[in-house]
Image (cartoon, rainbow over all chains, first blue to last red; front, side, top):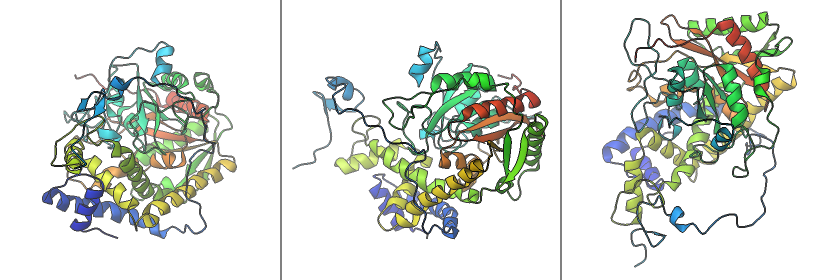
Length: 95
Length: 386
């Protein structure tokens, strides 16, 4: 399978990355090179094979459902590019 | 993991450079610019790459700027730079070290480990770094053995598998010679050499370039310009996301996010992602079959070549750069431990490494075997020019 520039634009939109016309053009070639490389997986007979979900056979540990931290709003927003009153600030989303 | 190091008295000297989001095999994708290796070809001033993504760690250790360094490995990012710089690097079993605090790249593959000057130092570092951690639910609660005690332990009677599929067509003659030398060294040390088959080896790299970007595209969704990192304003919130991510991510990271988004998108998930995860099951099964047949560890080359020049592969196809990880990526796909140990110099005077792959949580055997190779091969240090 190969992609065209329109598909690259659509995927970039899904990934929320703005691409210029020139970038979309270049990425189409690069993506097709990678997709061409992974195409060899089609040779493998995977019928009846379970997809891997965990590489190590362990049971996921569950911790007790209790509050272990909190009351640190200033730390939570401490790295935000824009914040106000311990809230993350974003462009208006509701009219 | 760093808390474990501090508790054992380690001192932090500083942070080291790496490829952006750990995506790269040469350090040339670093936001801060490429790391130069302390190694140079004999009679040449050309700047060489230290490998990647943990190239800063490998370079600093090779240049004797620090005693050891932490690193992470998703497809070879500890072992390939270790091999390029004449240092020892171990990627432990998936779950051996906590990943708390590490920016997630591909969560089913990422593992942390040390890069050190020699096998004993690597053993001491890993003993300190490894532990279960309530803050990383993938960290495993199994005792951490005394790895240092394994260094120098006899390797007599150990069965070492030599996978025939790693004898790639057109493999560099120096690498092939080094591999044979390693086989001879382990044989001389009393190990038993057996040829093994890992039939799905050639599919590991293509499967990796589906699984890793898919997981990365999901993990890196958190870089949205809202909670941390760069924000570039836009006309509305989606425009702000798109501008921030376009400006904040480098070309290689964008490439992988796009591949990952594509293989997970409606209509392609089964053909790409699900198939790759099935192939991964087969890759792991190949290893399990060998271990069940009594193989204690597997010896392979660490990289298909010695270090190359900065910019030398700049115009190349992305896939050509990815091929650097052809010997290391299988280990991540199967969650196994792998160590890269310096084993010799190329004709041009650059370090070359061998890789040993072990059973899950049997890092101790890798330290014993790594120690045997180190004893036979000697140590390699870059000539100081800086």
